[in-house]
Length: 380
Image (cartoon, rainbow, N blue to C red):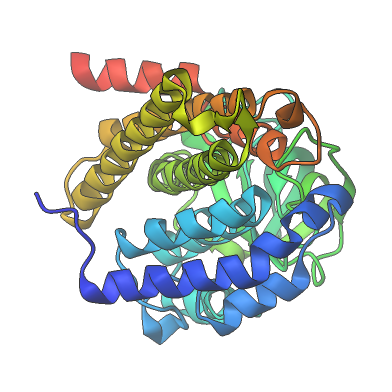
């Protein structure tokens, strides 16, 4: 298998990297400090065609494959972890739900504005008592005339407070367990009963609002149902499986930023009349950091390759996300260590990388759940 990017893919990645270096990196600390949604940057990403990267051009997308898309997302996350989450949740979760399970009318009406960057998407699955245990969700969608009446709430919803389109999961048959979950398209500005309760004050991932949502007799017409009643659980699993490739990309981007920063610092910082980069202990840290990043990147592209070939990639996506997320934290940790006392201050970006990296081990499948998934695939 040859995972080297083609000339076209490399050109796309270099264009994104140049944008990130010029527009994102200079304001990354400001995004982290203010924790405000970076509307201007998202608009610029849309102008570059990056808010609909993997979707066909007929729906307003860029038609990129799953090698180019994660490679581009890696660059975005290298500049800002929060911006990486904004794009990943928008494309891999909300957008992919519509692309994979929406009918043509739904794709034209809801997916195209997402792919063109006119709208922002969110994916509303988790609840306070139903994170990894999806079937325990309590949000319900009851038949009401020629539509559904939704009541309940969601937690930890990336982009939830700024989204124009939300893919929502609710129980249409509360007694059927996982087979009673369905998915819907919600338009917050149009649908009465959609309430943003607030956003979380998080350790990292700043700039991407993580919202608590409430649905108070929210009525949705029947044509907002994605697929058939009872399809929601399988839809969620398939969507999250693909999303794990892009969380691996976010992890790698943050790790690469941590390595780049540590490498430059080790060349500039002098102790005992020489740059600390000349000390073998520092060299070993840098070597391990780079090796881990390279291994994670190969795992990510292997999962992407299997997805593109139409093969089963559940185990490979779980492995890519698990390994990339854990080495992202490890690399960011070593970056702080190389910076010494300065790494523990906000004078350098090293501490931001560590805070942003930690989230990768939690959302879209915790490391513990992913190990279960990998083991189940092996035993099967």
